[in-house]
Length: 229
Image 1 (cartoon, rainbow, N blue to C red):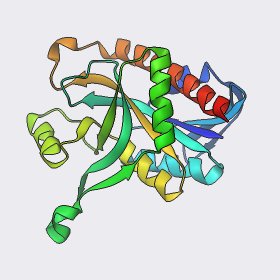
Image 2: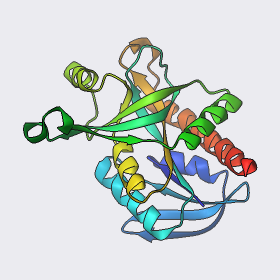
Image 3: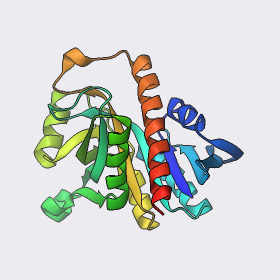
């Protein structure tokens, strides 16, 4: 069974279009939607915004099910010049960029790092190529902060210069999945970038396009994963 975690209702709704739903249950306000996608068992849930919500949803998902892997989709802000709106970022690794015990631990206390599953990462790249989706692979900076100020950008890039996007859930999902020893990959759609103000897209239009694109990617990825077996 594959667990699919989406950040927004719109993303869940698009994924469900590709799923034969068999049942639903709600635990601690987290809805789990079970079904099959290309004859593969899947369970879908919405994480909500922020690391607290994301950690709760991922914990429930892992405790309730025997998972072969977790695919997490969502939205992020781009941090490098090459990115454009609706490009995808595939996790090489994830850093909790707001974790800071440096007053006690020095430089080692800056950030918590997690490594995405290599097979899922490579399969994600193949699925993007099959779908004709522009993508980037690198470090996802995760923090309970909607970055809107130049100083936010400066801090992340000075401390974690390999970061290529910033968002608010991946760090928690990576931590919980790693603790449960469940392979995972994080995929983020770029909603805006620090470098290209001219490429802004009205958010409701972006959400619609990004949600459909992410759902198609998940469908292709799951198909490829299980055809391989």
